[in-house]
Image (cartoon, rainbow, N blue to C red; front, side, top):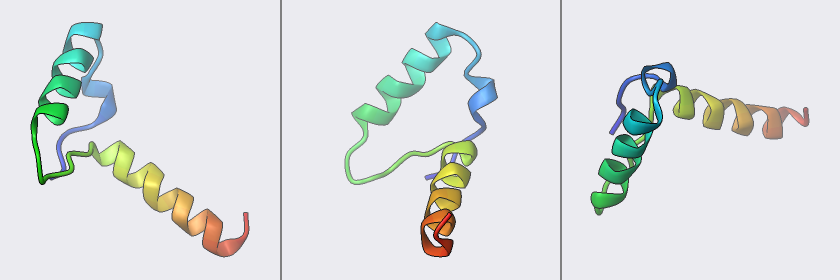
Length: 50
């Protein structure tokens, strides 16, 4: 499941709430769009040898 952007988690309370929500789900991976982008960028860098 994709949800929002990292910059929306602008307080410790919001970040903690998101992390608790994410940890409470089973059988589903929850990523922000920013996390997905970083993961894809890492794969592309690895494939290109960067």
